[in-house]
Image (cartoon, rainbow, N blue to C red; front, side, top):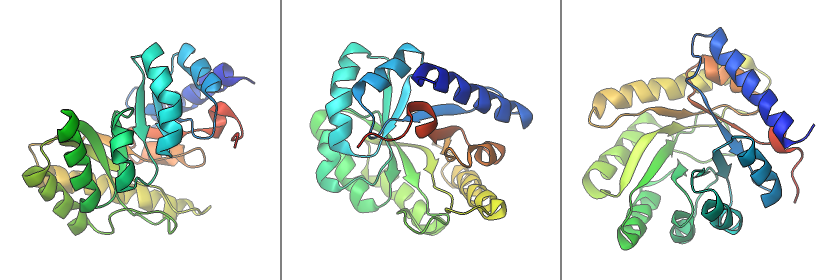
Length: 231
């Protein structure tokens, strides 16, 4: 099947999974377009997809600096680890940075935003079990980062949190990972009530149904839409 048919199938599966747990209409699809060419992304846009995710800043810039001129309604999230020296370029094309994992990065994001006169949405990445991934390691670290944003980062708006479940077939471990992120959101909302933490970005092709059951508002799916990666 082509991109349009794949996209339709993925959206149907998300709708079914969210309906099964009483969350119909509450889960967004972030189409992960990394390693896929501009032409395939444009096919998805023409089929109605508006929300995309990229890992690498240079690749995101090369594709979405073009696409955003042609399709200004689309939204791009940076979902891969972001180095501080890439923040400025990332801000030229992205609408949200999902992979904020340090106060150092927050400081650089705010500094670059102030230079260009914009505010950017962010999600704080929380480490819940996937050993190869970065992220804040404890609730205390997350709260410290949120306090830092409140005091020092007027150009940064935290919308919620992101995680990756451990790479395992053990559904209990996967479910536990997602439960941790949902609990973090609940505790953060109590401690920082002046923000509205609406987003939980969790769940990928192999575990998005479990993620939806545990409260995900945004699932990140790539291969099922665009096919195997084109390096």
